[in-house]
Image 1 (cartoon, rainbow, N blue to C red):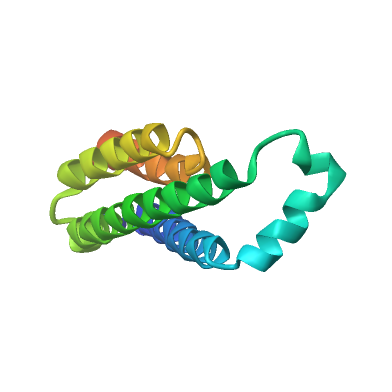
Image 2: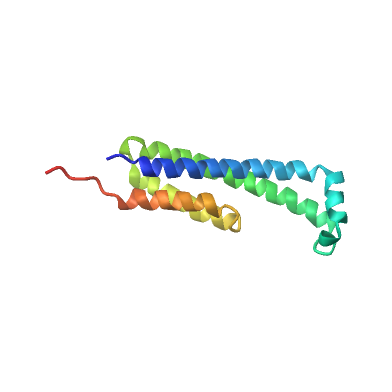
Length: 135
């Protein structure tokens, strides 16, 4: 049985998790750009919402969280795709996809919901589709 749909959804989800890790790196880069952040902070719209030190601290914490969780999800997604390839272990791949989607979405407080949806659908497809019996 071909598992093209699961592989495509897994690859799309892995790409989005890779973009999440890249976004985390950008957040860490912005944390070090004090002048740029000071300009944003001096804008009257943002000055009342948060204080400057909390902005810098949240960029650092959020950046590292996104990098670590996205890389873990990316690695687990690649492992699951390898398990699906050739229809070797579709049940294990489905479980990996579903657990990764749920845990990473919860850990990132919903920031990784889009790639999580792709992994969740791929995981459900892995568990539900049964091989066709030849009569």
